[in-house]
Length: 375
Image (cartoon, rainbow, N blue to C red):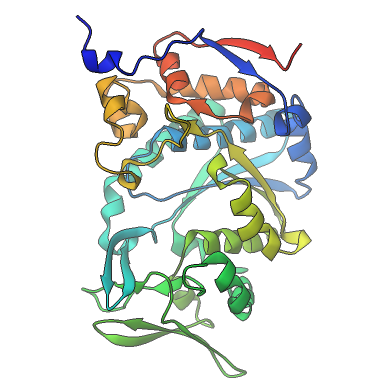
């Protein structure tokens, strides 16, 4: 007898996936790669992906990575372009958070090393994608990203505009969320929102002063590359910094590939309005994977405990982490082949896909592909 918990979640449908055309799916129905190639005039193309290594990658992350590799593969094979995937591991993401005297502090992944439990999962996926597509990749920590020679100029530019950018990028505090961990070996606390940070600019020095609730003041000198590599940024600020730095690369055109939850108002208000025309790089948004209600499938640590119990009840919790994916004997090739099809038929990329759609692939019952538009 079937588990009654599963019956509760059964949704009837005709197993047909339709593709109504509109916006991106209409304009780029069959000419997406040509359009991307046109806007990458430099000798090389680097496709950038990023991830916070604070848990095993879930299906949304796996699909974003896969989209990047297959876009790169098409550029490489169809247009003879020199391509590279660049994965930034955001090891400055929070690992521990606490509030002291009304100020929110964090210890980062790179301080606690919690990330060491998960990095292997990311690298396994990257290696599998390299083998499948023939596209090379590299990984970078945030310190390695901040070693880019264009970083100091971009950071100074951002700090000079801190009054405007602080209000826009961090509306709760109005401050730039630039932080650095306390240098004491056993501490590592950082003012998460940068509310107590003091900036000093003169002909003689460019410094940022931070406050630790336990050990007091400490400074970083923006003229010192090693000091710059200790800086941390919140997501909107890191987003802006990447755009400015990537645009200054003299040899490579950069494409950023990220989830579609970062499209729309977020990017319009927090990126585009704050950059110059020459800094406007190509951003491609991978399809979102959504739950039964249409909400983005999220890392389990970003939703309340038990939020995805229904997926476990239906033996679909492999969608929540790569570790569970492997334990249940699932094959990445199923996703690779599906995403390859999307890239070959670009109208498929401008939409979301439900957990039910993805699960059907692993059950060998891929939805029938319905009409493209009305014809």
